[in-house]
Length: 105
Image 1: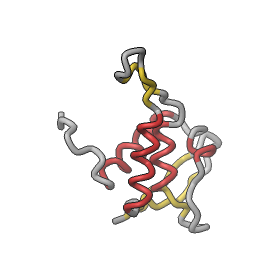
Image 2 (image 1 turned 90 degrees about the vertical axis):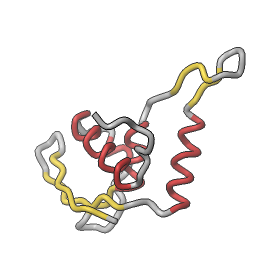
Image 3 (image 1 turned 45 degrees about the vertical axis):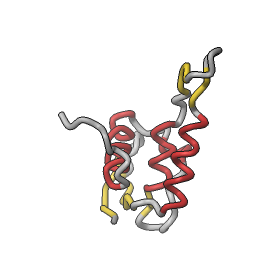
């Protein structure tokens, strides 16, 4: 599955992109990386989570430049406004069914 989107960068440039569903190995790798973000406490239970690049990690696996055919890299994504990242992150989660178990409001 895929969908075309236009993204306006902070410089005002419009990027024509495609959000694509990940293949199984990319999805598994993404989920494994999320486990690495969890920092255990003294009792071994999850204590806290590292959020640096959290949204960009998923977006960079799903977002492709329509013109070049290449993935958009994380360094570009983290420079975009948070509202753009939030919207893209939610679209990527939905497209890849990573939002299973979330309550719909």
